[in-house]
Length: 624
Image (cartoon, rainbow, N blue to C red; front, side, top):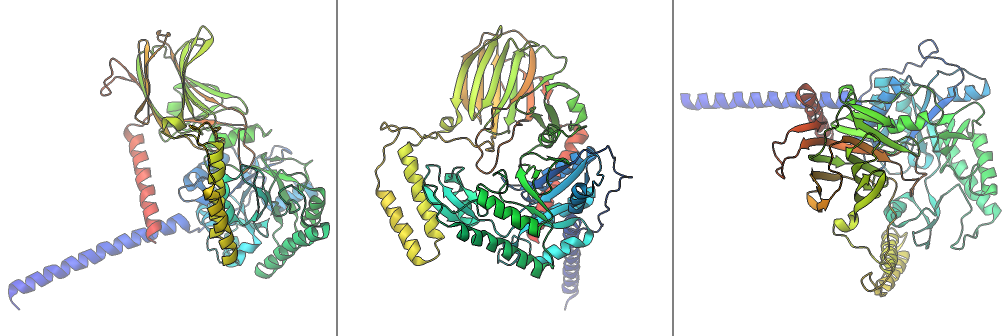
């Protein structure tokens, strides 16, 4: 081998070694990130009345989350959002209590901390345990993880098994609870009141979009037909429900060695312990036999001494709730001394919050209403807003009001109003206390969508139902029956709205999210608005041309429609990346900035680094 070849080989080997070292460093770094993100090392330290404030008998708050996801979904709260919830609860002095504390509060008159929190996570999902446990460690919080007994033995890997539950109990952050034996739906009707019968969660999840509120859970009622008549006798109902409790008892006893003491009856708010007196009495017998406590209702969170330990109430925060939404619901459930979260205090100090609560977080302004009322805030010491360009993203819910008042006087007797309300864009103005609407745009049609007729929707729903039932049929005979029914539905003729049929106007869910980019150009007596980059109104004539103040508003529009549970009485308007510039002409660049919620300097760098870190963590978790 020549000297040149030796040098080349040595250089190549050095390169390999360097690459191997770099790869090892990267792998070790990823391993450290994952371990640090997921593994718990500390042990839970229970409260004592010496280190938790005691303020007399104020009961306790019960909060129950459906589940936790790394980044969040429509139903599962994201890790960042859950951490913020727990952070503001901790700031308000909440100490977590156990099921034993609750039992002794009712049976022995045990004293509890002033702000006591019973924290529960329902449905027994693995991702809940993985992502929530690090937060419990961080805040030294204790929680109950509630499971369905059936899921301990099925093949669905997203649910915790008995070995997982035993491991969770080791560090003291968790105790076990139960949601019952199974999640199963009975007496289900679609939105056109067609009877669909009974179904498991998988089929139900595929049909959710076409169902109404007419359905029930397995333990809540007799099984009924399409005319609402029971199809089972009292003895058959008793045997069916008793079998569920018996299987629950046997599985927990065999797999865990005990039946969890805490029970969450599914679903809540149905009467005492069911929709029917016979069913209710049977449920009560079994829950008193098997459990020490039961959360029977959902909506409120505050439990006091005159409650029954078998008729407790819990609040189930939605995945999108900002921190002040949670705190507002707690405060107005008669829980004293709740302090709202301002977020960035420097930005918060620039505004007067006249009604509700405001948080400045991650370059967003979140305005939360009072229960069944409004939220309102005004930019301080500014009365010179006249010709302006406003850019922002509206990210509250479709059902409800998010609004901006421009050129407003102190009492808003004169103002130009721009709003999103119940999935409509609205422009209007107040003149001497009299409101006039200037534009009202249905966002569905703005996006190019057309309304189906009632006839068309009934057909589409029926066809979709047959497809789902055929796909998940128990055998080929039943699948063929559904396919034949699908073909019959497909052959039916329908008329469109254009052909004179009645339009089907979908009901907006209280929980449906809005995400719209808005650009407002207000110059002299003309208003132009772009929604998601498309013209919404052009050269709209306005009468109010005097400079004035800037207000942001949020409006609760009623309980609205909620398929899965009771809607709540608090609404959040979310103004993301809100910016106001002085408008001299229609040019969009280099305008003097009058107000900007965007971070600058160190705050901006911190936010960018946080987002990059979250992206790296997400990538690392996916790799492994």
